[in-house]
Image 1 (tube, helix red, strand yellow):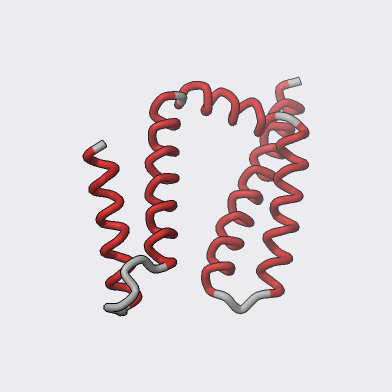
Image 2 (cartoon, rainbow, N blue to C red; image 1 turned 90 degrees about the vertical axis):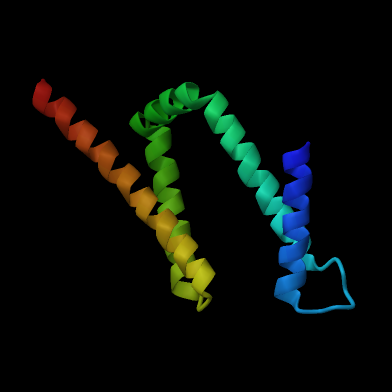
Length: 119
């Protein structure tokens, strides 16, 4: 609870400093920062608790056709965003997702080639 209260206070002060307004104590960026902090902490707790199950599920997903189809969809959607935007954040996010999708697609084909060579 103390960690959560400290995170809330840090989020509040970050919002005040970024807004540079003395009259508006709670700003939109304060709420955004607190939400991001809570999401990040929650993800860390879940990954720490279920890391083995996550790795097993991701390995199975990358070997299946559903993983390939999802990666192709993610790549197409990311490239559509890359073509249509000038926003730096959207470009970085879409570029990262497109890169991850291409790695998943390449790993699927590498596994398929390896299986054919073993036969």
